[in-house]
Amino acid sequence: MLKIRLQRVGRKHEPVFRVVLTDSKNSTKSGKYLEVLGSFDARSHERQTVDAERVKHWIAQGAEPTDTMHNFLISQKIITGKKRNVLPKKSPIKKEEKSVEAVKEVPKAEEKAEKAETPAETPKA
Image (cartoon, rainbow, N blue to C red; front, side):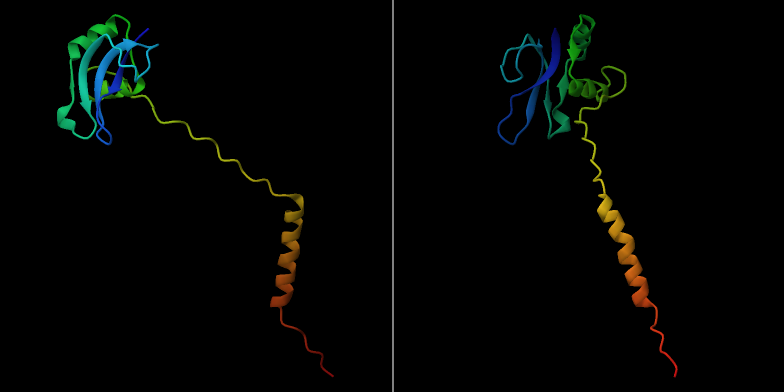
């Protein structure tokens, strides 16, 4: 299956990507691609170029963009649709179960605090 994906070509701490058409079995770092469709500079929005005609051609031929490329193509108004969530799902927070002993101790502590707050009665002789 053909994929339209980003291939990093920038140096350390300088993210620059090529928009390439490649087989989905190829690794992202393999360097193998069928066609370069554009470039993407993550730090500069002025240097983002994509050949819209070729992208539309390959999508019509059955190539699928990755989720990040799908969102990028929508933001460039090359294709239409809803953006996809590319962030990982958060794991649910596990609630700590209160032990039965801890629940029983809380009312006893409250009763002691209430007794301490009431003034002591002084006996009258």
